[in-house]
Image 1 (cartoon, rainbow, N blue to C red):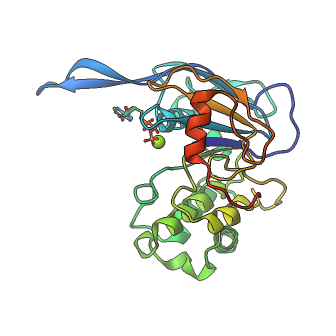
Image 2 (image 1 turned 120 degrees about the vertical axis):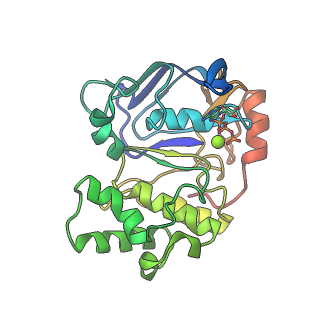
Length: 276
Ligand SMILES: Nc1ncnc2c1ncn2[C@@H]1O[C@H](COP(=O)(O)OP(=O)(O)OP(=O)(O)O)[C@@H](O)[C@H]1O
Ligand SMILES: [Mg+2]
């Protein structure tokens, strides 16, 4: 999974600072749902993401990558820890905010989910699915929605005529592209990509990696785990959701991480393909 900041400059204040985040899920038992333990999905993770930076989070299956992403978009409220987001002004702790107060941040921080089948409501057409965040955040009016959805579909390599179809009429890779179009719709400042191109073949990955971020087309998302070049810095996540430590990657074309745990995971994750 990875998070991408869509801009060019690198100011001192990080766009996102995660400070000691823990996410423990209760384990319940019996008719009354008594709590008998907890799953420590994420257990004390701290990291920073600066504007314009791409951070690859590398970890084995079950190490808490998806859970951490869901905490950042506040699909989950972390058990403890701070998620400080600073887009120009004072940092705001997203972990503390109530549902209503989160609304403006749901536009700025978007996530492409790992499962392209479960992530899309099967009862909505692509126009409704991709147009929903545009409408909710009041970004376009009336027929402009169709134009913007058509543009997003084309940007993600899908035909604009598809907008009246339902998700079941698409392959896994196409659904993943629909999810990416939906995430890009609001021109987010922070994009969290949970293995977002894993269902795509190499040529389509390259096409998606060259997608402009917003209408202005000023920035591009980079997806480090699946293409050689973008992984500048990596963060291995140990099993049990612990101990994220940053490390610079080597200068070679594959951006191989320098330390053994991340290096072995990275070797398994990299697919050689054209650099974006
Ligand atoms: N809602 C939940 N309730 C209880 N346990 C959960 C929940 N979601 C995740 N977990 C557990 O938390 C741990 C981390 O899961 P997570 O999905 O974040 O891993 P991951 O690193 O994304 O794995 P993968 O690479 O396979 O996608 C797993 O042991 C998982 O079973
Ligand atoms: Mg996952």
